[in-house]
Image (tube, rainbow, N blue to C red; front, side):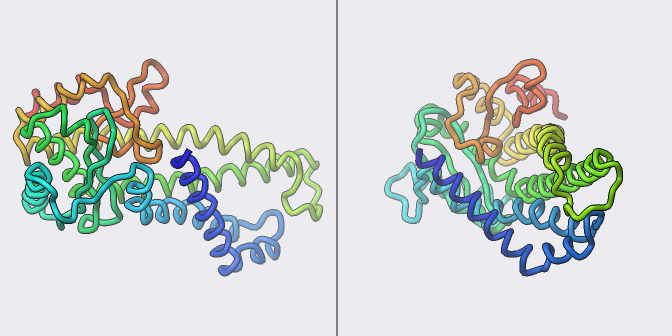
Length: 297
């Protein structure tokens, strides 16, 4: 319930903030002045909500991750295990040429880890208690190398850019088609409805769902590709055999993932799927990732 309340509250706050931005930019007055067929106001509206929403979510990602998972940031190591964890992350970060991330542990039974943050030098790497308990240190070091690889590759920012552009296109395309459908249903009469006809609203709602599905496929395709790159980074930082061993060990979880939905794509592994649902997988199957490392030159 805490995660649901946090997710809903954050999204409401983001929408409220973006609505204020649109008002301050005069987008509502611009759309009214341009009338039903105006495009400048619509473009600005789509960009503010599409790109703005994505980047606000990225800016809040570290805070959201800590709150939703209950992750405890290690500021002063309480034991030798935490000291080793900090030293390993610091070593990987130096070799990858990035700033030292915050390191955290969160309580979860499955073997998992994630990285997030707005920049390469202001990131968070968190591991589950289950991962620390069920993997040896060589495997944990490989998982940490994988997460540092995500940060060094700029995956969070790239994912946000892709998501923001696609959000903007979905909002824009749905409303343009909605205007055309509404105009056709009204017989092309130039009335003062301002795009408020039933044809407009129904078309926009349906097309946002349809276009949103296709956008999700594109985002998830990139997400799967970036996992191969992060695996390669983990192999460079911790050794290929260690990275392969860690992925093989992850198969014992059978795709279990208790991370909140907003963080699931940033974990070390994701849920399994078959058939058409594979298009919406955030991670490739572990067997494919292992084969890619084994076949790498």
